[in-house]
Image: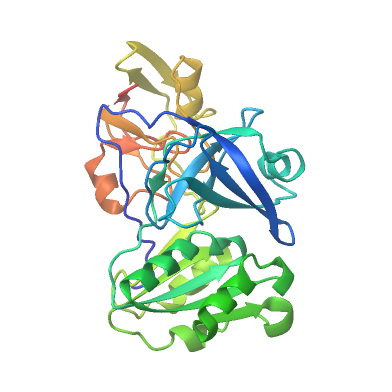
Amino acid sequence: MGGDDVVVNHLLPAGSCPAPTLSLRVSAKDVVADGVVSLTLDHPGGARLPDWTPGTHLDLVLPDGTTRQYSLCGDRWDPYTYRIAVLREPSGRGGSAYVHDRLEPGDRVGVGGTRNHFPLVPAEGYLFVAGGIGITPLLPMIGQADVTGTDWQLLYGGRTRASMAFQADLVEAHGERVHIRPRDECGSLDLATWLSTPRPGTKVYCCGPAPLLAAVQEACAHWPAHSCRTERFTAAEQVAPSRRAPFEVELRRTARTVTVTADISVLHAVRRAGAEVLSSCGQGTCGTCLVPVLEGTPDHRDAVLTEHDRAAGDCMLPCVSRSRSDRLVLDL
């Protein structure tokens, strides 16, 4: 169906480790909308930063040890700075509050290895659909489409015009290609009109809250297969695990074995055994904690891996996924 979640991953090969954390400096902090600040990061020694592609995330490790994942939304052709934007989440776990209230220019933060679970694939045209802070991964995609001369349009919704980050810049730079639809002025996005007629060769990229993703997927159901690509901020509704019985997890490199019971996650169990696994969302949506699987059959419960990746069974996200077999062997 055209509305499938299609996410292609650049996965770590078996036996590899995530890229080491960089120590970067907050060179600028700017308010870009109501409740949204942008951070510009650079290397304190002026070194070049690792390259990235549109759709890439990074792991931001705050000075208090909190790790959160954010989309890179700056200029991918600038090799010396990264930019991210952070929405204040009043009901969040404290990471966004720290960024808004305590982080200042000059502070140092850790940045984990970048990864892309939402890549921009070649197409004859693009329709970008953003909801709120979901604009962030789409900004470099728009830049890439401009560079390649590919036709595109942006449909951008939010609570109010003032809450929609970068909207004024987008309109100034791209004019009629950008369609700003604040809910208090225009109501909900008119997806029926925008998506009623399939456009051969066009890919729909959508990022935002879960109800928007579901609505876009439903509206694209009659489009050609894999026309719609979405990225989630929150986990999809989970079905029951395939098994409730305890299972063993062997950490091959450290020669340790732990028992995972129904009340704990694989991530918690392996960390308790001394394995250092970086984690961010804890919901199976960001891919930060991806680990290689050497033996056994994972019970995949994430929103990141493709069906091909799941069938291969050679990696898993231990924050939410479990085991179908009595034993899993991880490359940890």
